[in-house]
Image 1: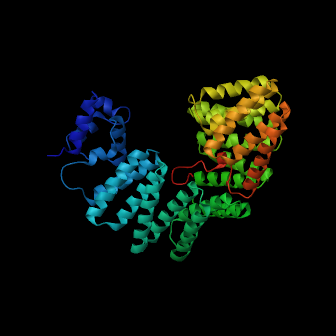
Image 2: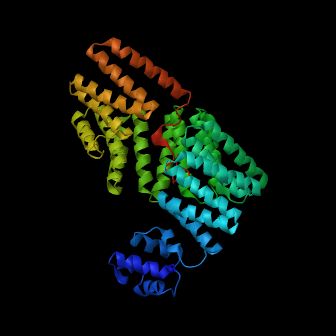
Image 3: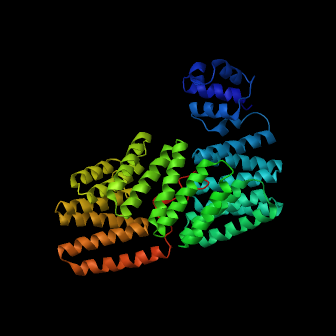
Length: 450
């Protein structure tokens, strides 16, 4: 005989050697835990989430109970999957959505089946299983279209577009987005967030194609559509995207203006993570404008925030930019200190973009100290990392730096091909084939982050 939900809670608690009081603390009561364990009370989803976290069990563990599952259990499984997805717990989301999908099929609930497949596809996408994501979302798309469910179809199209953008397939993404906009216009669905997100993703797709005017227009339309929703987080994301588009098109003044609006919005939301990202972006844009003195306080603030919230990789990247800024101000000692500190937050032997960026700034620092040969070694290390990762913009910068150092050493024959390759890569970037600079992308959750 299967265990009841209460029996499972009790067994998991005893396995960890916890008392009812320990499980309840700090925001539940011992009497509530007792009622649940004795099957005299079925907990809410929010309470069950807290219990599952404290007992180190997935939420679905508590649904393998005696007797057949019902439509109510199906709805709860879908809510669990969507909650885990929003919290970035993708393996748990996969488990919940797979259970929901199996139950939806056994109950013959096509609407829930589409919802479960959509969630499952997103979870696959966020865990990097892109082939499964594409297949699952494609199946959800076909079923939603067959059932004539406009709302579900638009949601699936948006996830397919997000997947295509993640794969750097902007034209494919635009196909999905144009189909979504057509459905939205014809069906007049009441949820304004669907139109906002569709326009936002269309802007990102145009950005990847280098069509920055069209990108800015789409972002501004999305901003207008979101104005009445009160969704400040989405508005902040859109300000950041508009700023990124202006930066990519070379309009640095407008880029700064929109980034400042984005930061003010995230400050109002007390979203430190995004405030830190936008502060770093502002610093980088000011550096591009030739204002390292103006960039310095933004970068220093970003470093403090990453330290406060414990984002080590982001902190390494920001410290590298801080080092570059201090070097531009003539503070070679401060620049070296920032780079050495950045290295402490990277895993040994890391070949991440952050490692490459630290190496590139170190090349400039060491060169400023008069050690050209060591600077060349750092630049070569950076180049190797960026080649492995396929980061076009960073590759061009690394080739230019290495070429400059080789010219300084007196070997123009080695420098020339590097500089020519950099020119070609910069030409590709101007056409937009590399999209917006990576650090300027949407700082949003899994459904919108590319």
